[in-house]
Image 1: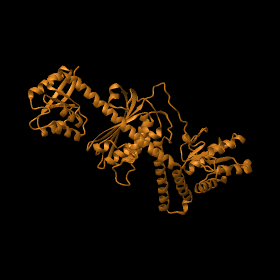
Image 2 (image 1 turned 120 degrees about the vertical axis):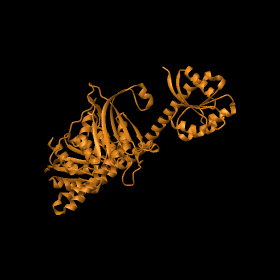
Image 3 (image 1 turned 90 degrees about the vertical axis):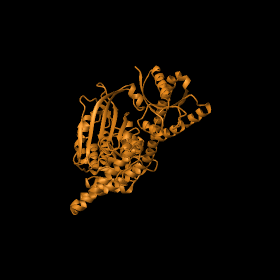
Image 4 (image 1 turned 60 degrees about the vertical axis):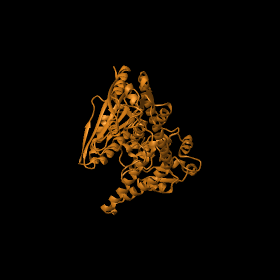
Length: 516
């Protein structure tokens, strides 16, 4: 089988162009050629996106240096080979410096086949190198954001805990307020939840928000989220769901997959201001060697492909290379953080998959996500769901250990409202002193993990459990339990609460621990 080849030839001699085509055919190619002699003709031929360009050096109405200049300005990665009978070595070197791939003398056309093949290999090598460099830059940006997130997450979540806790305490006395006052308080709670989501997105980049992997059917995830997406998209956007049959399961974090879909849907909605269609589809796909060559992120194997396509305004080519950068956004100030697509990229990377995008201005955008498929024998990782309990209280005594005064005060108030007796300590060291005095009265310890004074909440727990191995202890932190465990098996909602948490979560977790 001969290799198809779209050729753009800059040549004023039809006979020389024909000799060139015949030599390509002899070398195993099946060329389709366009011959041009002037700059306007060349510009038109360049827009068609040829596979390769051959150029005579001397033409009456055009020149090779000018052709090279226009090719460089177009930004296309097309091999440019000079085929001339008059070019000298000095001019050839100048052309190579200007971007030409190689040159062949017309009386040595037998070199043409090897030169063309080498040119294509060099182009592919350059593309691969550029892709790797871009991936490295992206990884470095993610690492920078991760360092920033890791530095501010704990303090930021403490502040959000104060905001949320204060609003919830006031709402508990809601009978004293007007409906407008209650609505304003609910908006404060909603804003604190959105802020906590933003922190979690940042922590995704830093790998400090660990995944909870389990065997997941993406069809179920898509169908469960569809009703919510219809409300988010609005009435002028039609949502179509096309779930593939016999879809293979994947090992994934269900919450993160929902976040991926939600972020892509919101992005699509914002691109369809005048309405349109959003299509979400799933399918099994096998990736072979040919697919790997065209995508450096891909690996051969079986995958589940999740596709999100819209009929929106599309993404300009200049923006397309930057859409996954953290904080890059073309939206108006206050209408986008620039973290939506960056979060999607980070999540898919963590799941050992990849994401590609095809977009045309005015026609819309299509995002394709590939996740490794599980075999029928691979059961994945399971998660034991935590059942919801009513907001019960109790009469037990809780030792509350928290260095942030405002959080300690808020938590104390909530616990007292729930009926508990509370003893406060501002550090691990202070908690030890109180423990020795009130040990027989304390039923449960609620402690922050990160505290000053040289004793963390984990250190405190180890010390107390030497005396009473069965002591109920609940840990809190602005970080996820997987990151903060260090020897303790922390389970959110069982013996761990991630800040900022709701009052009903605190009540439920206390009762779960005490009644176990």
